[in-house]
Structures are given as structure tokens and as C-alpha cells.
Image (cartoon, rainbow, N blue to C red; front, side, top):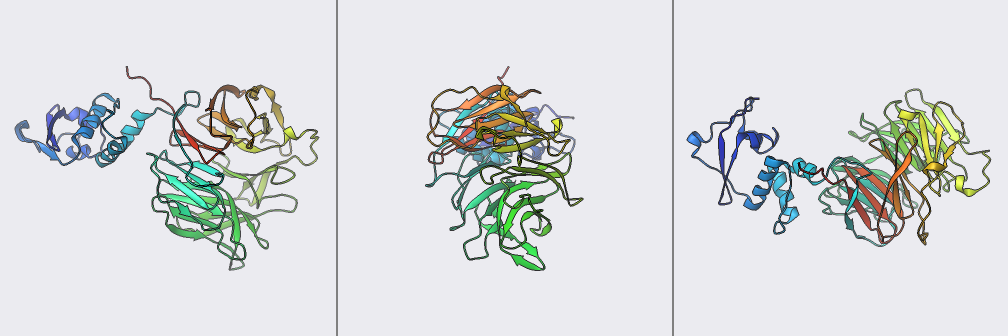
Length: 445
């Protein structure tokens, strides 16, 4: 890389700045400053004899902060500079990723710190929260979905009238997918793709059977790397099961019908497994009296693994499975009950028993919330997360030992949480309050 040591001069909004080509090169090829270099990373001859200034009609205070970020890798925002103004200027210069990297470090569940709390935006209990790929999130409650960008600025809400939102998922930073119940007596339920910034509906996903479009209720959602969308579907006739769509075209490409005695159409959770190219489908208590977990292989149109608690010697309600998540590296499915006992089912054998691990149970303490929520599970960067009442526990290591927990003093029970964009979002049942947890950046040496 033949970077010259020339001094570069700028006049930004009437203020003069000087830096070097080496510092500007830290911004990267796709930045505003990357355009000043040729293919060999040599500075274009736009400043003969180093006397000409490059004028930029932007905010000089923000330019000074961003230039210092390129010099040191450290982000310091003076109190007189609004963060939103700095983020806007960083987007103009193509430095928003540099700002995000300096603002928080790589995700680590054992180092997370509460960075912000956002109060409720609408009446009623929240039903789901989903982290966006860029660090934003969307929150569903009733028929409404509120979308926030990574700066936690709220976009126009998505209103589905009187349809009830069942699940939400991020297709990418620009589009969000919403599944909902059909309206009573009308054929306009199902699933739609919405622009996350404007809330506009891009297209609906139809279920087609015998060359006819069918009305249906869409539930749990999942995505695969090859741009497929999976949704649990419950129809009025015989289209119960798992639907598959192409997220680029919106066209239905497959449908897996449930077999007698096995529940697929009203599933609580779907999870795509990259290693085995299978879909985990879980229908859990108390939606059904019995729990069903299965792996579907769409290439063979076959259920390749299954487990159910039918016939299991359950003597107390605490062994009911409330959530499940597949862990391919250990060939197991992790499940959790209402007391946060973690259990493990071997993926190499269908119909095996649950191996409950009391070592992973969180020690009881504090007052039980008036309205406890069912626990949820998540797996991220080799760490296992489980929500329980008003806290989230973090488990690590081959034996999944409890290593830390996240809790704050108000907001009520956690009804859902989600991890993405190097952030953890926790939605509380009280007034739709949600928390944002971030990993502090490493200290500057």
C-alpha cells in the first residue's frame, strides 16, 4: 500500500483542519475520504504544493470528532454536540461503522452493560421484540409494530388494523417481515413484507393450494441463508404445516403438511440449522397439552428427527418445556422449563428423554413478579441465554454453567428478548418498556 505522507488541508464550514493521507486512509475505500485516493492508495493531486484547501460545507465540530476517531480509534463526544447530529454527519462521510465499533465492543454476554431504556409507545402488553441486523429493533404488540433504527430513532409505526401480530423478523436492514392472524370472516391475514423506514407494505405472501389462494394464519418465522422464508401456517382446510417462500420474489416454493398426531401448523418456534439444512419446529406447552419438537428436511420431504413428551413420566408441571433451541455443535436441543432448569435432548436419536441439568438453574432470590412470563432461550457467539422473570441468565462452557445475569430494578417480567447487531434487547411486560444492553469498548491503550 503506497500511502503518501502528504499533509491534507480541509476547510469545513469555515474552520481549517490539517491531517495526513495515512489518517484519511483509515476511513476505508467506501468512505467520503476514500474517493481522494487512486487504486494504489495514492492521494490524488488535488492540492498542488499543499496550499489548496478542500472545502466541505458541513458541521466543523462533528468533523473534528470524526477526524480524531480516525487518528486514535477512540470516540469522544463533547456534551455540546448532540449524538444524533454526529451520527448524521458520520453517515455523510461513510464513517457510521467506525462510530458503532468505537461506541461498543464485540458482543459478550458476560460484559454487557445497560445502555438505555425506552418506554412504551402504545397501550397493551408487548408480544415480541426482534433485534435488527444493524443494531436497531422492532417491537410488536397487538396490531402494531414499532421500528427503531440503530440510533433508536423511531420510524413510522406499522399498523395492521385489527389483525393480531404473531411474529416479526428482519429480512435485512430495510425490510421487516410480519406474520399475523387473518381477520375474522375475511381473507387478508397471513404474512407481509414491509419497508422498515416508511412502514409501507411491499407485498403479501400467499398460500396456494390446488391453484387457489387460501386464507391462513401465519405464526413463527425463520430464515435461511439462501433467501428462503419459513412460516408456520394454520389454514381453514388442509393447508396446516410449514410454508416456504422466496424472500426476493415473494412466491411460495414449498409446503410441508403436518402428519396425523404431530403438530406443525401452530408452532411456537422455527429455527433454521445451517449445518444439517433442516428446520427445527417446536410446538410448546401451554399452547398444546403436549410438546412436539421435530427437524424437517425439505430436500427429502421428510421429518428426520422428532421428540415429544407424550407418555413421559411427568409428575410435576415444572418439567413442561417452555422453549427450545437447537445446538448443532453439541448435537443437542436445549429446552427450558418455567423454573429455568435447562434440559438437553440428543439430536442423534429420535424420541430420547430430556437430560435435565440442575447445575444450570438460577438460584432463587427476590420477589416473584405478579405476572411472570415464560422463559425464552437464545444462542449467540457460543453463549446460551435464558430469560426468567425479570432477568436474563448467561451460560457458558461445555456444561453450560451460569456465569452472569442481566437485571434491572423496574419494568416487570421479561416477556421476550433478542440479540443482534452487537446488542441485546429485552422487552418487559410492564408498559412495553425495553432495555438495550451493549458491550463496552475495550480500553484505549
